[in-house]
Length: 216
Image (cartoon, rainbow, N blue to C red; front, side, top):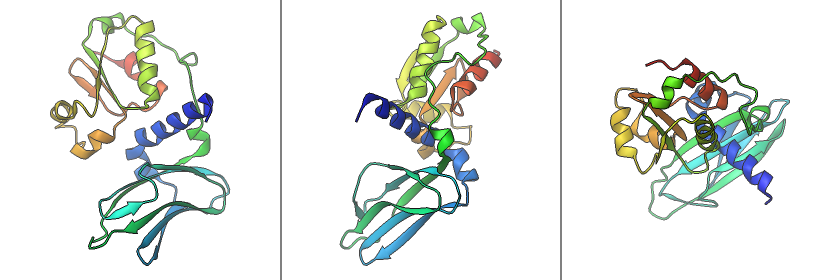
């Protein structure tokens, strides 16, 4: 796998996780998750009835099945097609419980890879340079790296912490935000500026707008 493909794959995966809440509400009905039971085998397929391609992300969390892959599945589903995603095999004496996350995005959105902020108007207030800023990051988070580069280039001091390693602290910070405990672990990027915590920053543009519009 070449380096360009790795970057593209990581960024696509990030986009799916970061848009999880949004995508769950706006999932295109032309792309559906199909389940087929065959004895102990439970197979998952993505069916696309649209005339354009979509990218799908599927994650299965279970202790009752053996999986063909323990990693989340990320695939492009061509127009008018049905593609196999993953196979679960039920373990003996298990009930067959599992949790799923299935997210759909248009391919044109998912493959939009940005490497800088040249297209955005950046008017960061100098006051930000004196604020207590923390980036809570996750693994393979392209936006996290972009944010750190932006802050470094703008001479804005910041700290970095890992979301999973600081889960308990984040739970306290977000207790009145309406975000569930389990959802915190699925957030790829969280920005804290002084006492304000931002969990909805999903793109470079949203990051820039947040910084431009920040007021104490």
